[in-house]
Image 1 (cartoon, rainbow, N blue to C red):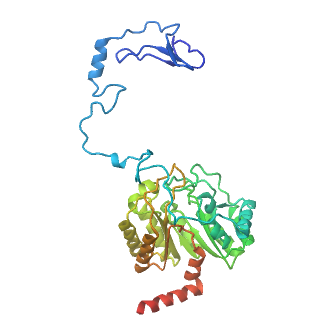
Image 2 (spheres, rainbow, N blue to C red):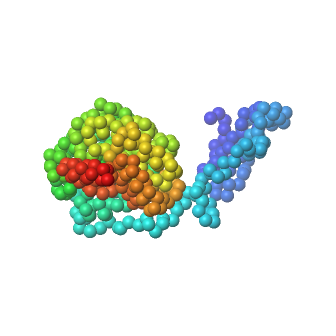
Image 3 (tube, rainbow, N blue to C red):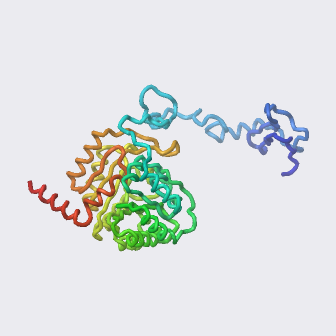
Length: 399
């Protein structure tokens, strides 16, 4: 570093810039009181400050170096004040506050508990299994586990994507665990579930996105639990349709892929996903003869008219069977803020509009999540119950 002086322990040394730019006196600031002192051995041959050179430098810059960047700015053409996120206390509700909004009275969930919940939790821990119920902090975990319905998360607990709403950790996943399908099947046999939802993190670093593990898990689980219905909630596999076919060939009772939000919100909510790609995935699964399902959150920045447009898009392009709609809840301050609390009355209108558009099942409510009442949906849309339901739908349609 040339002949620069050594700074005393616990101090910060600031050096003078080269000649020809604005010069600063060389100072040593020592802690704890940060009192400026002159160095004992100043840099030899340091160029003296040249006022003329300083003026020439400042003339080349429209704004003072290191100064207020808005000092010389003209009158603004557009005010962005209303779009700035802030955490300052305000009177009444501010849509741009970062502080968690007080939950309304209709958003209340029972604390997890009871013998059914405890039994499932012990089995999960014993077999080192992950559940999206726990990872994502689902408010319905206690109710579902007590009914004998759980959502298993395979392919690890680390996701390669960074969605703005999701509480599952992002990073570089561990080495692929090819023994996981066997452990999942054995655990499900012990649980005695009547319906299971299997989901996963995104594994974009894998060539097939984890499709082979997906198929193996479905087949082994069905072999171990022939009376249990299987629903899968899969990622988009980056549009790898050959990999998707591997999952389809395992024939789950219900195939779910969540759109999560309306197309306009994708850059913030699902930055690594594409709305049209997700709709295409649902279409391909429907064309393969599977019962298809998707879900969205509301209260994350969408408008009501956009929700209805999404319904129309799904029915026209993918003929999706089941739609779930629930309130977005901000997991932490590092996630997207809540835009609004959607009222139960609005959720009921969503349900009515969805059924009117041809969805066979619409679960719409503040506490609804993708796997909410999944067992009842499976009862209605698979096997003999599915035929009964479709027959009733036709009869009702003739009235």
